[in-house]
Length: 89
Image (cartoon, one colour):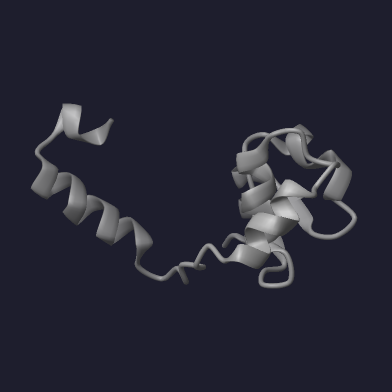
């Protein structure tokens, strides 16, 4: 998608800049198995994101909190605005 707006080189540079300061979690077979067996989250990709974050982070930031209603007792699910209100300057 980004390549349609800018060059591939520029898209790669911007993507690398966006990931600075973040730890990228590898997709493991354990995460995939947990996501396949997850019945509290309807969307498979959302289940992958949840199980990638579970046990590794304290806060899960999303614009679609309702997608994670079933797991909100396991991880703090916040919108970007809520996160900034709670942890921002």
